[in-house]
Image 1 (cartoon, rainbow, N blue to C red):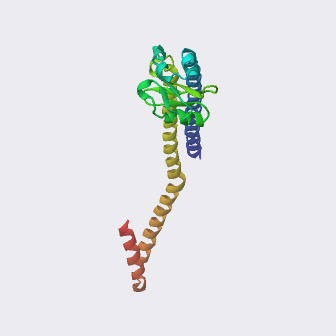
Image 2 (image 1 turned 90 degrees about the vertical axis):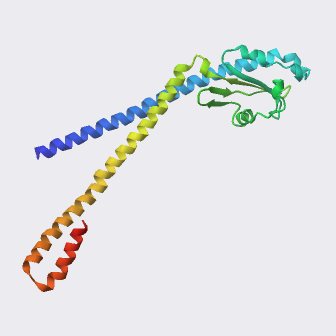
Length: 229
């Protein structure tokens, strides 16, 4: 009885410890992910809005006069975190830079349709498309920012750690589920099989010792079943 009690306590401790680990991975990963995501979003929105405002101010005269050939987006690249900057018309076709004039920026279009902004955390580069409508001239300024050279490495690192923790949590959850299935479903089935096998052996031996010819087919059937095992 003491042995059984110790075993039960041990199992309870293991289950409790496993649950604590799972919850730690889940909540810590969630906190990291939320904090990192908010930091990136805030940083990206502030910088992108600044760049787009600068685009608008620097090109105000050219925009009002619809002198699209004079539009300047290259000077914005002096910001270390700016990867690209565009000025688009209302159909999301690029007006500036000149070498890409006429191309449709589908990502900016998608961003506007989904709520005027879209954060894209890609591999290697962390970019944001932040379109802003300019109603009086029906143009959109778009800033694409590269966070591989900005000051948010900690947030990016936290985001990667959070994803790793979530992955580890799911892996441990799968292992734990398999162990539970093995313990509460497969083990009883295996025990039942072993018990039936033991009963068949005993009964087969007993029937064989009776030397009753009428029982020979039953004994043979039992032996065949046991041989298959």
